[in-house]
Amino acid sequence: MSSIFYRASGVAAASLAIAHAHAQSAMTGSAGAYPAKPVRIVVGFVPGGGSDFIARLVAQKITEPLGRSVLIDNRPGAGGVIATEYVARQAADGYTLLLTSAGPNGIVPAMSAKITYDPLKDFDAITQVVNMPFMMAVHPSLPAKNVKELITLARARPGQLNYGSAGHGSTNHLVGEILKLYANIQLTHVPYKGVAAAMTDAIAGQIQIMSGDLVTIWPQAKTGKLRALAVTSAKRSTLTPTIPTIAESGVPGFDTSGWFGVVAPAGTPRAINERLHSEIVKGITAADARERLSAMGGDVVASSSADFAAFMRADHAKWAKVVVAAGLRESP
Image (tube, rainbow, N blue to C red; front, side, top):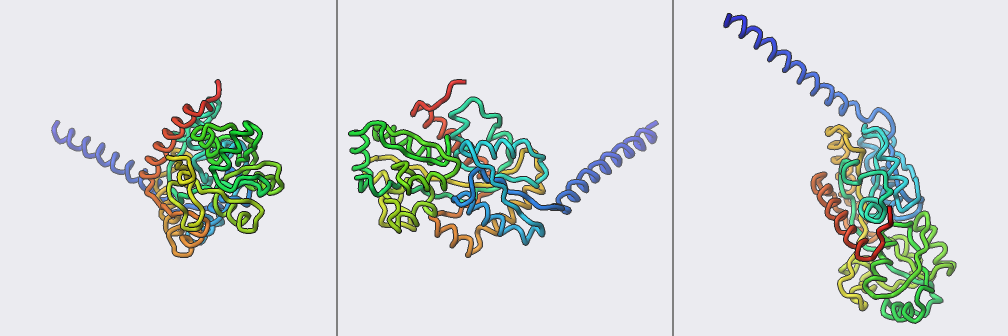
C-alpha cells in the first residue's frame, strides 16, 4: 500500500515538475523570440514636439539591440488621452508601447470621470525616461517682460489674455491653471492638438501666452518670435541659466516639471518587460543620448520599473489634489 502511495506521489510530483518546466519554457521561448515583428511606440501628440523627440530617441536607441524596426505612431488629441486609451486596448505582447506623461497619467483622469482607462492598473511600468521643466513665454507684442508684469496685466484685463496648451488636461494646460490659482488671476485656456500647433498660433499672436518644453519654446525665444519669461521648475534650467523660475518671479512655491516614461499594456510577459527595460535604459544612459536630452533641458532618469510605478502613483495623487484645488473636476 505504501509503495503504491509513494509511486503515485512520485508520478504527481513529476507531472507538476514537467508542467512547471513547460510553463517556464513557454515564457522563455516567448521572450527569446521577441520581437518577431516591428514594435510601435505610441505618442499622444503630433510630430515635432518634445514628446515626439523623446519617443524617436528611444526608438533609435533600441532598434539595433532588438533587431527589429521600432516605429513611432502619433495619435494626438485630448491631452494624450486618445493614444492612452488606444494602447490600453492593445494586446499585452510587447509590440505596442506608450510614451506616457503627467497629462494622461494623472491630470486628465483627475479632471474627468469619463476616462475609459485606469492609468495605474491598465499599464505595466517599464521606465521613466526623463524629467524636464517647461518654459513660459508670451508674444513679443504683450507688454510683459517678466511674470510679475504678466500677473499685473492679467489682473488689469481679467479673462482677456489667452494661453495655449497641447490639449485639455496636458501638463502645460495645468501650468496655466496653477498660475491662475497661485497668482489669483483669470486667463482663458485655448487647447490645441499638440504643443507645435499652439506655438504656431503664439508666434502669430493668436494667443498671448503659452508654456512648453524647452526644446520647443527656447529656439523661438532666442530668435525673438516669443519672449521667454520663466521656467516652471523649482530650480533654473542648466540649459537656460539666465531665465528665472516662476517661483523667483513672484509666485512662491511654484514647481511643475514635465516627465516622460514608457509603459506597456498590463499583463505583458515579465521577461519582455525586463528586456525592454534593459534596452531602453542602456540606450538613454549612453553619453550621446544624455547629451541630446540635456540639450532640451531634460534630466535622464532611467528608473527601475518598480520605482517608475511608485512615481506614477505619487504623481497621480499630486495632480488629483491640484485639480480639486483649482476646481477643474468635471461633472460625471
